[in-house]
Structure formats: C-alpha cells, structure tokens
Length: 147
Ligand SMILES: [Zn+2]
Image 1 (cartoon, rainbow, N blue to C red):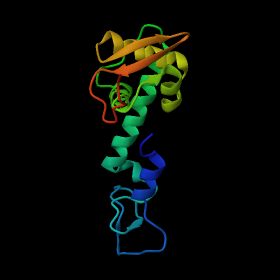
Image 2 (tube, rainbow, N blue to C red; image 1 turned 180 degrees about the vertical axis):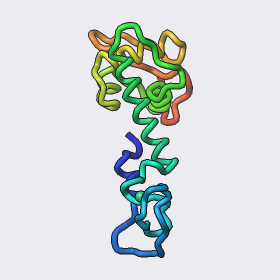
Image 3 (cartoon, rainbow, N blue to C red; image 1 turned 60 degrees about the vertical axis):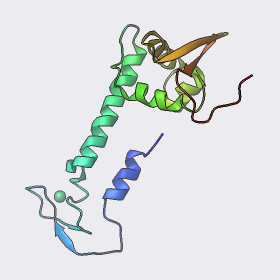
Image 4 (cartoon, rainbow, N blue to C red; image 1 turned 30 degrees about the horizontal axis):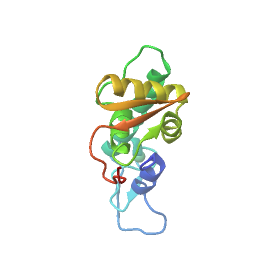
C-alpha cells in the first residue's frame, strides 16, 4: 500500500559509504554530525517535518482502523480509508474481503467502511451472498467493456 514508512526512513537516513560533506544535527541537544546535508541524525530523524507528517498519518490510520471495528463510529469523509478506497474504485470493484485484505483490516471493518461509503453516497454497496461488493460511482480509468 504505497510507500512504507521504512522506505521513507531509508530515503531520509544517510546512505552508508557516500560522504558528501557533513553538517550538524538540528536537534538542539545533539552533537552528532550528519552526512549528505541531511538535517537530522538517525536518532532525531523523527523531527524532520516530512517524517513527522508520515508518522501522524500512520497514527491517524490506526485510529480510523479502530473506529471501523466499533459498531456505531463513523469515519470523517476526508479519512485515509475513504480517500484510498475512492482511488481503488477507479480501477475495479472490490469485495469486502478483498478490500479488507488490501487494508489489512478485518472483513467486519471493511464491510462497515463499504456501508458508510454507500450511505454517504460515495459508492454503491452490492450484496453478493454473504459478502458485499463496493462499486465506484464514477468512470473507470480501466473500464471493462459493457454489454
Ligand atoms: Zn541528532
């Protein structure tokens, strides 16, 4: 699901080997120097604005996943899972199981996400036996031919 936080850390952390000059870590208490013009050493990398932002988004996503496991809680329309699902629906329909797998959430949580998006008029919920499928309202980027 996109760029993992580890990829991001790796990109921001200094590469081993290549030295392109050193500077001082911007943490006030820290005496370490950093390589390749990186603003923070590896101990203080979480202070970099980009990393702060990523960590906040991951925390938000955890909160949203917890909300979906509750019976009555609702997601904010601007939530990560709703925005991400709208993007996914531009390519194809998703069963609740497939959506749950994609987001590493329970089938129950995926069904609640689908039900809310249906109620909010963001997508269509189609009952298929014991499962539900979510279908987008807009044009598909990769539209399959219709009869
Ligand atoms: Zn430091």
